[in-house]
Image (spheres, rainbow, N blue to C red):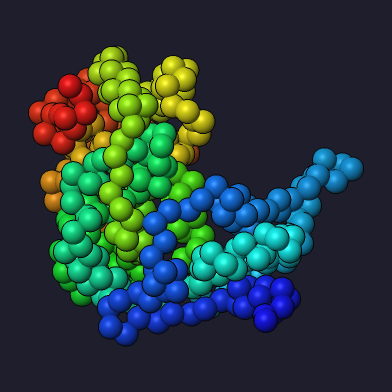
Length: 335
């Protein structure tokens, strides 16, 4: 029998997996987990979201020794499990979840693996649209997959484009060598985070999602989506994404509203072309290289502190919805 101490040691050890055949290997994938239960999610939240600072008597933040270790070579964190009690450790071990698994692959392996994933029968537009709508309430994990899929479909096969001073591809922004803290990345997606930067890391997300059975939106998911579309349609001329987010927050239609988790849902509508703009084509319509994106000029003043990503950044309330695209992709959920 393996002792608890030995189990903790085995889980805390980073497992470096270097792909040599364009496949990302994982014990978690081999077990084909279909979902993450609430108990496992709460345990992982304790592991990945430790309190890192406390205020001293003068009101200044002081770092807390969490036991987590930063790996300078892979730029990933090995998360300590000492915060868990014996029962939590046992449950985590029995789950087979890749808590500290670090996966590595090159730029070219990453692009090839993305293209290979497009052949998976679960990764259809219909399934991904359904998962996106489930993401509003019943299944937050459903939010990122359609963005990762759109990138996989749009980006052309290409070799790494090297430019002095950059460690990422000047064409697609994937790093020459990617290292991904797999467990943490997948956990964040179950928490409902989705984004359009870091495509090199999202490969493991799409691979995990492809193994999940298709989900069906609930009436609550569909209701929330319809109310969001109505709010977007009601945008005033010149309204910015930030002002739209403020209106949505005040409306209280999004359960457990959190700025960045919700923004991912708007980013998806922008990348699908449902929230249109005049300056950058959405991923649904094709790929725009990093170099081309850098050369885009708009009349918007913007803010140096803005963290809204294009194409959502370029949306304005003057043309809030592309009704034709909306009906093509979401028509069956609007009737």
